[in-house]
Length: 245
Ligand code: PGA
Image 1: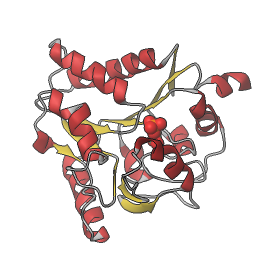
Image 2: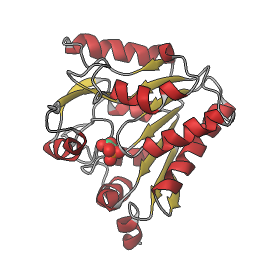
Image 3: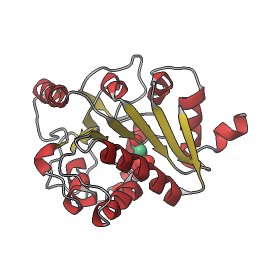
Image 4: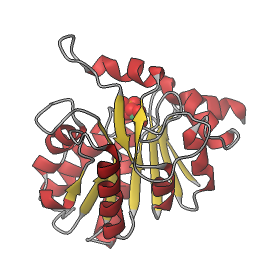
């Protein structure tokens, strides 16, 4: 594992964006696994700047996102497809046809999970998977469970996730309580995993994920087994880990 400690969120975002840029510069047709949530927003801003400065070219890049709320489509501003379009894809020279997010509007769970796994198979492997981490140690929407998941599946969200994410929904909006998510095995199959975290709220999850027992009760703990894990986290997110030394 390569661990980068940064002073704050801005530095975390810059460092992680630099790693993604390096990936794309070295392999212009990279398959990037992307994440949503508040953590990657600064990374995407840096990538957009990199594109505008002429440092990064997305024309050959393909992307595959971790997850999508069940019941939300691209028109809904809370959907992860909408998030990706408005926070990254609309601002860089990526071909939208090369971007993939599970279809939250697909009612047939088996169909959608198979379809997304086929998309992943056709891409022949994710080069770099960007991951945030939930307060409860989830990655994607793989919630604490009795066993590790494999491929794309339907997941009922944990109450802690609903509590954490409901802050992003307005009063008049109904937050979905389930999602489609990439499985743990698919995440582990990525050639490089880039885990990012900031803030005190993530300190316990980061400590458990990186130094605790490997258990599906803390889904991110499986990342200890990944042969090319890069962690970029700020001082606050690493505070419990550092106390542990
Ligand atoms: P956040 O979510 O970036 O909004 O904190 C991370 C996650 O739940 O994976």
